[in-house]
Image 1 (cartoon, helix red, strand yellow):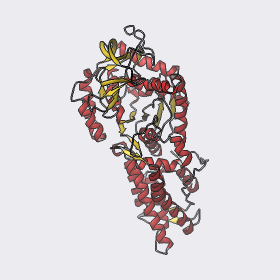
Image 2 (spheres, helix red, strand yellow; image 1 turned 90 degrees about the vertical axis):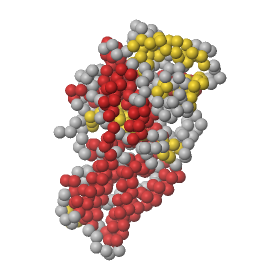
Image 3 (cartoon, helix red, strand yellow; image 1 turned 45 degrees about the vertical axis):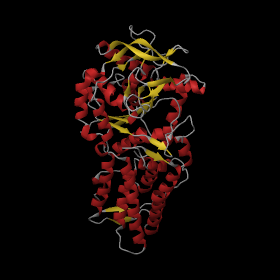
Image 4 (tube, helix red, strand yellow; image 1 turned 135 degrees about the horizontal axis):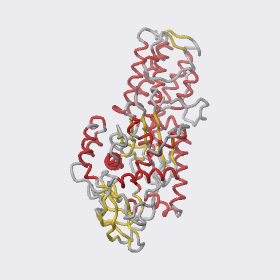
Length: 533
């Protein structure tokens, strides 16, 4: 019996809506994988939620002239609406409510009671003019590892941690003209170096299943002493720290990641009508669920080092993630997305102009799996039109001329094996051990063109087994179902079948012709049939 699967799309920071660069990474990938698991009959729970406590919410709110809480609330609703529009279907998108906060405090207090934190005096950047410490997204400077422009905490460029006072030539994000000084502060930290051996064993056991850049990064990270991870900060935005040793401080927003993710799954369970006994129940070791994280490479240090060590520090209470699947950056017209410079394409705007199936196809085809890739609206129109929409619509039209809807078509002895081969190749693309959105999208193109050519030959009078062609078309539609979600719904309704990648689904002696729905470059109404997943 297969284990239940828990999937987390790293909770996005609620400092604005989502652009294409955001969704093209972990969220489209997670949704595609989840839809595949469900089509394979696996029990899966997919959840996420807003990350309200990040200092980026504070700095963005200041720039926009609003309050951090108002921005977080607005952004949470925008993100949820955008995901719905993109067809990214989570079982629960958790709010930052009392249950969320209770789960975070329970998690943190448990680590505190187990003696896992240390009180340290550290040197932090400080603004004399504003009378505030500058940490994480409040401070910028050059990364001490790669020398790229960075923020405090983690370098977005190389992914490595940036120690408390390690930024080169630091400056205030709120006011770059404000001179940065340093002040000492006594904070609680999590001594990551104490978990070196457990982290080494964890990552060595999984190195053959993870993407090469992630493996390289972890090996580089563990080749030198690991820094202390801050548990509390002397800043105003965030959840108040509950410790007597750090009065007036707040919890580091990154610390919320694991209890927040647990709460997201708890929220999803309640949305489905169950009542878990605790906020962290789904993650408890006794349930032996398979846990999968989808995150961006720039967050890998937190998710693959800090959070793993935290879970280990709970001394067997929790499962550890089987897979952390990370993606690289997605650029816009060969430059970084920049909301402040207006260099951005909002996901909700794009799917208001282009059907989401076509957007999802292009994002899969160009997903940043191993290196930075690029979004181009001109390329989307050209590639989708020439490689997908045109050939697919020609195939659909030709089949309509060759057959009558509802007609029973015999399948040759070789037909089932060929259809099963199509399903098998798609399955390899969606399984985590060989996961590739690029290859899955390319397979759609490959088989659409191949079946179009077969149908064209049949229309020219050549002998073609139409039953085999329709059976293979069913396998193709099933393989495309995690990506082309609306077309799949229309095709399944028209053909009276349930998409499946099981070889047994194609072990038949005959099949039925059905009207194949076309693909349109114009936005279509949402199909009445529930999305096939």
